[in-house]
Length: 85
Image (cartoon, rainbow, N blue to C red; front, side):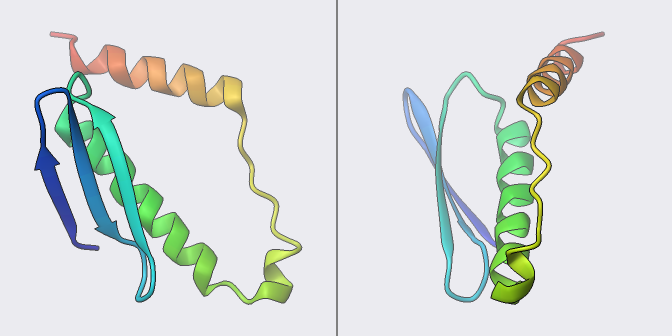
């Protein structure tokens, strides 16, 4: 997926293709490392592309496994690992 980055003083805007007919716009603070944001946006675009490729009849039976507490912990560990020696 191709991605465009517009860097600003207080935040950055990413524009990424997420399929043939879908574009993902994401805005992040300038405090977020660009590489980390880029990886998350790239992964999100790939997931969106997979979702729109799914047959609607199959999508009804799909369960999105999202655990907010687990995500928060993973986010904290990822951010901590960025600044470790």
